[in-house]
View 1: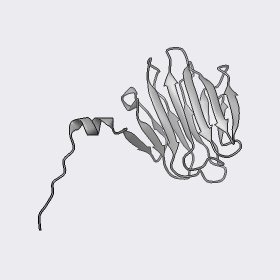
View 2 (view 1 turned 120 degrees about the vertical axis):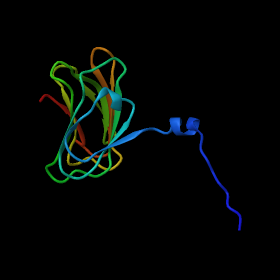
View 3 (view 1 turned 135 degrees about the vertical axis):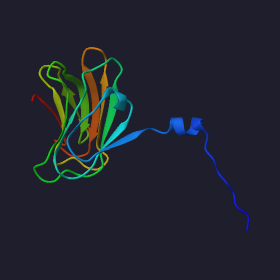
View 4 (view 1 turned 90 degrees about the vertical axis):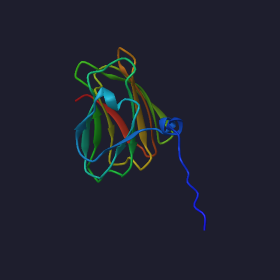
Length: 141
């Protein structure tokens, strides 16, 4: 019986998207920029974004549906805000910059729902998709 050895180059490893699992409330760093943040578990979590730097970005992905009454909240610093839109249950939901410093996965969020955040130097630009009505929201803390 012969053995075949398969190796991967560093080039292949570099194209794989990096991930970070969140199992409890946590603060991210700018070093986490570009990662897919997997939100795990059914209890509510607060994920705090770092002091914003131009070009910092994250993609948050629901791995487990939140339990009844639970919310996974992504929060920026009080001096920053979110702007953009969500597609929720097939409908566009606009997010105005006035006062929105948290974007949330509610208890109706499902596995695969996501929110992308990108800091453009002024505000956090966000886009997300939620399968069910009210699954993604933007609020003021």
